[in-house]
Length: 50
Image 1 (spheres, helix red, strand yellow):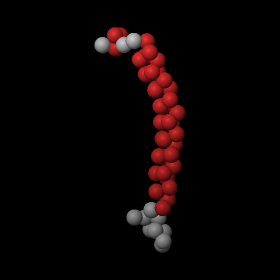
Image 2 (image 1 turned 60 degrees about the vertical axis):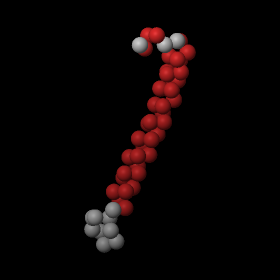
Image 3 (image 1 turned 90 degrees about the horizontal axis):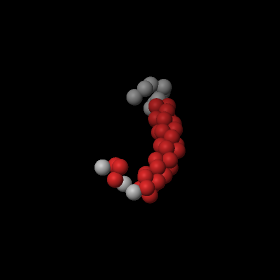
Image 4 (image 1 turned 45 degrees about the vertical axis):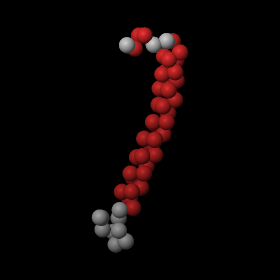
């Protein structure tokens, strides 16, 4: 199935993978920062956790 693809489809697939890796890394950094911010903001006014 995959070996029947033309060369330009392989090039397109490779380009998509190469572009998606930095986007995924950036998203993962943003997601972990967002989770840390949410954990810090859960502390209430009096210092109790909710």
